[in-house]
Length: 231
Image 1 (tube, rainbow, N blue to C red):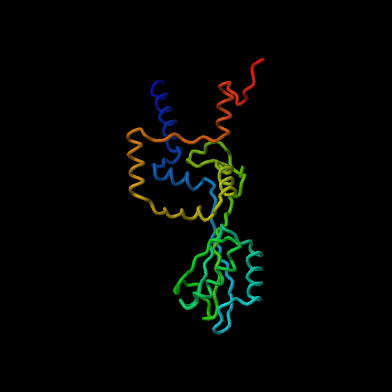
Image 2 (image 1 turned 60 degrees about the vertical axis):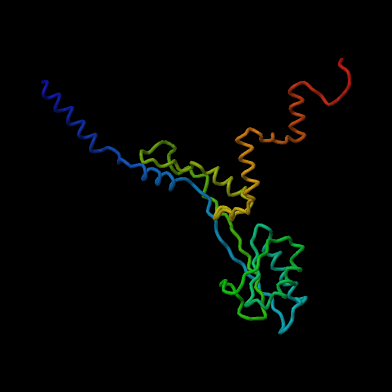
């Protein structure tokens, strides 16, 4: 009787071990977890418009100005876009200066690309305005197609992170930052080292609080800006 019980127990254990879930190592678990979290997708878009000049002309014709303005308005070009002025060679510098002058009221971020950028116009008497824009593709959320319970494969449930991803995509001021971070600007090494020195010596300056903080602190301590007497 005792031997039969042991055989039954061993049979049950063997059956359970054969049906066990797959064991993932750490790298596989992290990869699966990242693949199953909804994310926003930056999409690069390039728009272009050609400004044509007559042979030897430096000023923009009125008709070219109108079509350029229509291009900017139709595509809602703004400071979120990167604008590049491209010519066939360096001889178009005077023409580009005129385009700069015309675009000044739009307050755009404009740079100039030299030859070999891959976006040069076909004609030497043409300057191309290239608009580089990044759009945001939001994930298909909410997604309750899967069960919110653990499925044993280290995958997040289908709607995990949807709200966070959508909020990021809707709030980002410059969508291109999702594709690539901005370059660090120049830094004064001496100024930076002095800041570290002050921090180590405990000589850092306190943060400047605005008037709202001052009012809130005064209300919390019972102080008032009025000089009237008490009741």
